[in-house]
Length: 190
Image 1 (cartoon, rainbow, N blue to C red):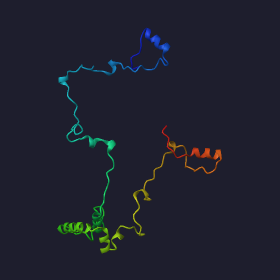
Image 2: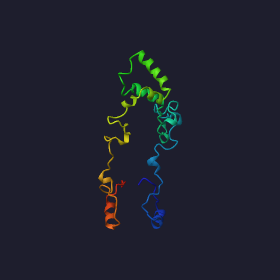
Image 3: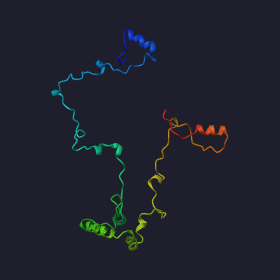
């Protein structure tokens, strides 16, 4: 055992009155866990362990390390940004037929910012077929990422669940509902 145990007369008293005499007292053996003993080292010889960059508080403020409050940041796209994306595309999928190269391209982006300040309605009034590049082949807007058919579906392991596929109990029959309880999709943590 790693804890101090009563000895002599008090050991007998402990064996008689304790609910569980073999239970630990909770008092650690000092020679086991306190080596060197507190105050045993010369304070002048002690060096703080330094881990860089984590120990550098000047470049590592608490708000950057606080994972409990690292909320998702909002992403805002305004109308001038949408006009620019519809006109020249994005960095991932640029439209080479529209975007010019070099200084002419920089001037084109400045002109796009000015044009985008007028808003989407003015852009669609000028170019009615602009949104067709964004729509799919069937003319529908793109699906959200959670509804894409090629997305990975989460499936629980059979040994972590209460059974197979979940069947909604329809009848009031007790035996039928007991069968459905065997196939409940809740995860177990046992």
